[in-house]
Image (cartoon, rainbow, N blue to C red; front, side, top):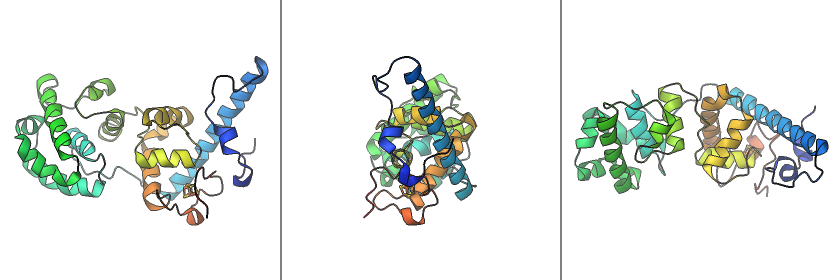
Length: 251
Ligand code: SF4
């Protein structure tokens, strides 16, 4: 089956997320319509994967870390902050403090001062301290390699847990959905959902599991370099041949 070219692409009709009653004809017709839609979605997703792979073969996590604890803390710090800034802050921080117990014992004001430039520093400092105290008390100071255990830590949601599992442990648990992945997924017609969890679920369903980790890195890189939030550079984008450019102002 041929995939639709950009001009023929009816994004909302073809790739909208199915709702109850979308296939008005019950039985076989409705079922086969769903199958076709799912197949086309997967075809489209694999085209995106192939193009991004070609464009960014070496894409990787841009946070600097030497162990799972460092990546966990760097990811907590990266909320609403650039990875570049986080790397500047953690370079000094990780020279002085090494273990979960070190961070758990740190006076809150000292930690706040050290991470201030990453923004939302009071909340981040509180979470880092609580998270590291739990690691010391319940996990012998180690970062657990388990999604549910990670999500139970202060300041850790699915995104952070997926980052740590994928990049520090090589465990594929889900596609990391940050602001770039969320924006690009919408424009590329991969997901029209708004919550990160639902977008992740759409992406997990469309992409082969072996692609999940690198796919996020490549989408993030593409979001930083080409598919910018305010003015996406569609004319120079290698994905334009099949990108439906949903909600992109083409003026
Ligand atoms: S830059 Fe334009 S063509 Fe490229 S992925 Fe973004 S919206 Fe699509």
